[in-house]
Amino acid sequence: MQHDKRADIDRRLRFALFGNEFQSKKSTSVQLVLQRLKQHNAEIYVDKPYYDYLTMGLGMDVRADGLFEGYNVDADYAVSVGGDGTFLKTANRVLSKHIPVLGVNTGRLGFLAEVLPSEFEQALNEIYSGECTFEEHTVIQMDTQPETELSETQSIDDSPYALNDIAILKRDSASMITIRAFINGDFLMTYQADGLIVSTPTGSTAYNLSNGGPIIVPQSGSLCITPVAPHSLNVRPIVINDTSVVQLVVESRSHNFLVAIDGRSERFDEGTPIIIRKAPYTVRVVKLQSKRYFSILREKLMWGADQRG
Image: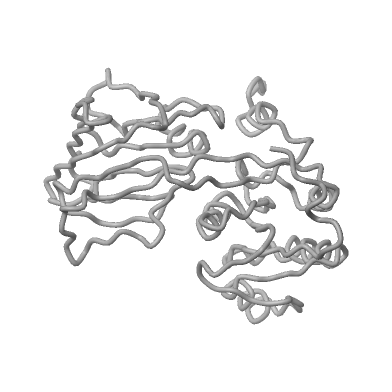
């Protein structure tokens, strides 16, 4: 999606800054981001916990135009300073506002946060010149059936949305869980495994990949269901259309299980029907002209690299 070049003319752009409060060694990158934004006369708004961490924890002089908390974010762009985990949290906070997210990678792998601090100036230049593009990334959501009564230990997060994946996992280390899976009401199979992952194309290179699932190209209109350590060796991941509705019913010896929504875990009682479907939102990711999906895959996964000494 090409950015409208006329949209940013004759007005100051507002940037919402998010970051990782546990990366004290990354303060130099944050200072560079703030410096570049000021050079472009941008309005800077900072997530309050992150602002407190930078100013009180690290003693930085952060001159922001304002602070925000929770989901009360209003900006033209969100800037995530950290790794992919920080990017996921940022995306969740701005999801309903459809604010484009630019990930500045101060972490390690960086499939989502793909802009290096040294490339941030280039990113701003492309934003202000209208040369950057946006990629719309599919989001999935989790619900329980309306008639299901939740126990006191259960709750559905205020934002039950996942950019990467929703995983059903066992709570204890002793035994597997049994998961009956249905696609659009049709029975798929009964999994006996440590868990089951439903991932988006974005999340296909995350937990899904580490469990033997396939890499799915963004905008392919697909979801993937991948078992975690299945009891039967002939159980394989399956790719389905992203308009499909996935229903999962779990049985466990401990009588409960975990649901991890992009890593945010909640406990549910066994027998609770879990419904996973495509969300009404997408995440808009800011893409630089120089970044290409397959070249990023080759770089991050070291495809073709000779590992011999």
